[in-house]
Structure formats: C-alpha cells, structure tokens
Image (tube, rainbow, N blue to C red):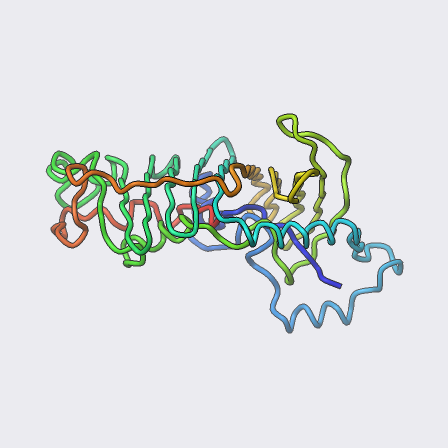
Length: 299
C-alpha cells in the first residue's frame, strides 16, 4: 500500500525561515514547515517499524489511512501531471508575520511575485533559461555602494541566466512542476481520511484530511479537490505547531486555479533592465539580503 503525505505547501518553508520570521534566533535548519523535510533515514524507519506495534495492537499504535483518500490523492497526482499551465497563490503566517506569493506558470514561462517581511517585494519573470528579477529597493541599499546603487538601479529588473548562482535560489520555484507539491510518497507517515463534501467559490469539492505527529510537533492538513471534472486540487491548508521551537505555530494556505488556460509572460522592457553580468561587484544585490531564509513556494 502506498503511504501518502500531503506537503504542507507547494513551498514548504525552511525551519531557518521560520526562525527568522519570528526572531527566535539561531541559524540551524530544524526541518521544513511541513512533513517533507527532516524525514527519518531508511535505517531509522526500519528500526521504528520493527519496534512499533501493528495497527489495532497496543494503545498509541499508528492508525491507517482511508483507502478512499489514498485513491483520491493518486487521481489528483495523475491529473496535475498533465496540466499545462496554472495560477497558484500561497500565504504563510507565523507569529504575526506573513509571506505571500502569486505565481502563474506554464512549461516554458513564469511570472511570480513574493512579499516577504524580511526581504520586501520580489518580482520574477522567467522565460526558458532566462530570468529577470526586480529586487526590493532595500536590497540595492544593502550593497557595497548603497545609496549610489539604489539611485542608479532601484525599480530595475536584473537580467541573467535563470540557473546562475545569483538567481537559482529564487528562480527554482518559478516553474510548472509535475505535482504542485500537493503529494509526496514515503518518509514520515500521515494518516489520511475523507472529510465531508463541501464547496469552494460555488464549486463542489471533496475533502481529504491529514494528521501527522512529526518530530517537530503535531500537524493537520486539509485538501479540497474538485468533485466535478478532473480531480484538480483547489485549496490546501496546513497547520503545524513546532513544539521543538517553543510552540511556534504556522499556517500555510495554497490555492490553485486557471488550469490549462493560456499564459502570457513578456520580458520587461529594455529600459527597465540591467544586465547581471554588467553590474559592478559593489552594485550587485544578489543574493538578496535575507534570501538564505527566504521561503520559496517550490511549486
């Protein structure tokens, strides 16, 4: 039997990002905000399996997932693997801090805007293997040349290879993935059950509930799936308490729409663009200040 676990997000935020958002201090990465990171090793999983009681045995035994829920998630994965374009939005809130992201993407292009309380607003355009990124004004001010760099370049896109060392961390999430990060197989087990039928924006929806006791604390996820037509994911909500970080809580909400609708992404005008290769070292704002903890919605 497959063991599925819903990702807490299309972009799971790193533990370091959470620490930075809530000013808890420290720079370690205790794992992702969701059940994908910090998974036990195969050796540890095998050891736990040998020592764990079978379902229906001693109190505290791992419950088993509803086969109907597992089957529905398999259908969702098959459906999204064939999607040619989509619009995705995400919102993460933790300790009063909010990160938001809005993405529209197809196989060859993407436009993404991220708003991060530690970094500011970042605008990303990707066309094939090229990318244009507009950093926040504060990122220019943080360069060696500071005010001079900001006066020269603030409000400009920086153009360069999408996979360049300066861009890769930001552009990796600006793409059309196969599974949208809704599903993941293996690792920590999550118990999946079918919830009540509901509606989202007037469209009937099926509900899959997820519960998980991870090494960082309890988690709960809800996924709404279109009940008519293709079983596309409509919205997911993931709540988690990081007991290992003093009870920090996180809520991540994601929504998907515009499946297979044409996407038009255009390169910024030449007058709005500066070439990455032509920036003086003292003017280069990359990597963006704080981007080492920037939670990317890895869609």
